[in-house]
Image (cartoon, rainbow, N blue to C red; front, side, top):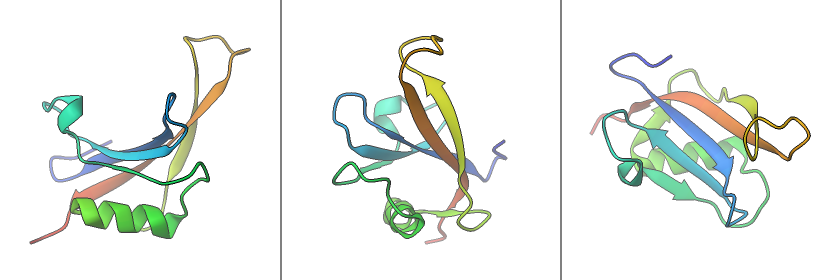
Length: 96
């Protein structure tokens, strides 16, 4: 859960691009305005790659390199359908 000074960063593979996308969820902002980074290739980005991408976006993990992974079904709630993996971590803005 995010507090007023923290945000949730999420990473998932794009449904249409096949590339991993990391983004910071900012409530009250349009999804198109969320800071994001798209990784090259289809390999899961390393923890170091994720940290570097977050830093480039102006954020840093709150609890170190801890990412939680969850499963989501695509499309809908069909457990027989393909599974989409989503990683998340708590982050805070880097002081300027």
